[in-house]
Image (cartoon, rainbow, N blue to C red):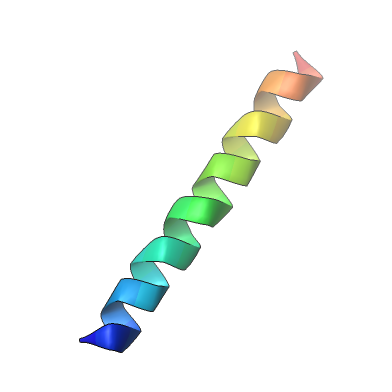
Length: 26
């Protein structure tokens, strides 16, 4: 269960950084 939480957090962080870079390029 801890692994799943870690993966979810990692995915959230990755998507957030990707979104911020997309906004930065605009």
